[in-house]
Amino acid sequence: MDPSEREAAAYLPPPSGHPRFPMFDPMRAIAATSVLLVHVAILAVGFDAWYSALIGHLEIGVPFFFMLTGFLLYRPLLASRIIHLPAQRLRDYIRNRFFRIFPLYWFILTFTAIVPGMYGAFTGNWWVYYGLLQNLHVYEPEGTCQVDLFRCAIPPAWTLAIEVFFYVLLPFFALAMAWLTRRV
Image (tube, rainbow, N blue to C red; front, top):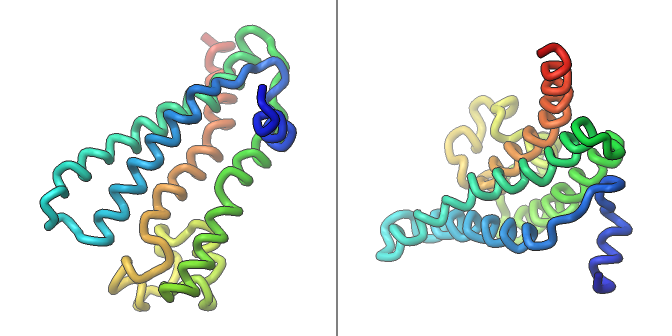
């Protein structure tokens, strides 16, 4: 384990007794990069460029990313139940998921609100954007964002909202599966 991996393990340790899968990180990075390229291409040139068909196929990164994430996050929950490895504390799970998404997202949201001047992040509804709630339409029923969604905050952030929903749902799913297997 090189020094950067030791430092990362100190801040985001795996659950006790559960191995990391170091080769999955590059695969998740490739999937996330393909999603980023699709969103940048759509926002920059739309679907009219000659390479749109090629870039459009990179959206395969979305299901691939979620499949890998599902495996990596559900495996420790399942292993603690099936082979009785120590369970990850819910507090650690929430902390790790929070630090994976929100600090960088908040930085990028603030930066895009300042530099290109995207609408929303510095309005009275700042909590909607910083809380990844912009896709729930709980705000501005007749405002700028209803008319032109691409001018509000970071439009592709809907994928992060889905990811956070998945992170919240996963422990409940694991509990339901544990309950179901005890009953069946």
